[in-house]
Length: 412
Image (cartoon, rainbow, N blue to C red):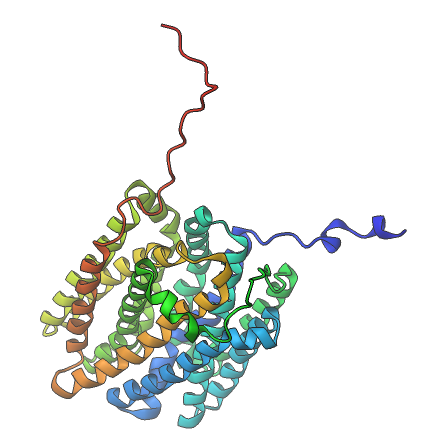
């Protein structure tokens, strides 16, 4: 009887829009962006050796991979909204541990931050696949990048500067931003996503989806693109600052350059138009080719640190392009009934790159200086260029609408 008095937005939650997902991604960018340049510095300070830093990242990567594979099982026991909230709470706990500052606390902070990132990433992607149509995925990725631009641009340089002024400051800001992110998530009323019934019920864990994943070349290629792109960012974020410190260029340079690079995120709408005018295959090949050329040249120019770092910055601009287009082959191929499981499979790219990159870097450092890691990254991206040649040339383009038979015939 009183149902008419209930506001419509309370009776029927609005469907999350592209803009809503962009705002949520932007808030997470603040949470993580202000610490992305801080963690390598505090790790290097606490451990005092680039090899030990690589070994620590390697161990954290394995932990994160195992945690990511468990997220779908967690979501079956706990509603997805609570799983996402758990990720937000781990961001807050990570900031608290980092403030304490001891080597053990720093390692715990890094582990919590990494697991929180993979947890929210899986849930976020599952929500996107629930509420965003296939043809709007490119627009959603662009919106996510655009709204994240401020956090990823101002965050890295602000983090390293605040670390010098007052060490707890960047962690307090990150924790506060995580609180705001959680509040925004609950205000948007994402719920638990769409439920799709299946005849036999879903598989108990994403490992059972691996055969199906491996049987779809576009999924495998999209996942490999993500792994190699993420490895490129690992090299830029972790080993460029160490390279700068060893060459006597200061601790702040890495954070400053990362902020400069991330300013290119504001051009995401223009880059998306460029991708649409060409094709996803051409864009992916162009991005990886740019990284290959710049990272390879940076290794050979290591005797001139300023030149080497300039080349790495140029290569990071190509990584920005890949952030927009390289994940689309995977997202466009996911079946609706496999959203959560395939999101978990896809999210493993972070953990795999987080294991492989420091692992390979540790081996490289046994026989070569830090610049050798740049050459290893160039070799990986060169392989991605060849892999991208197998993508369909019209992938991501809208199909032309055939003329209707009822259209009037022009008079002769």
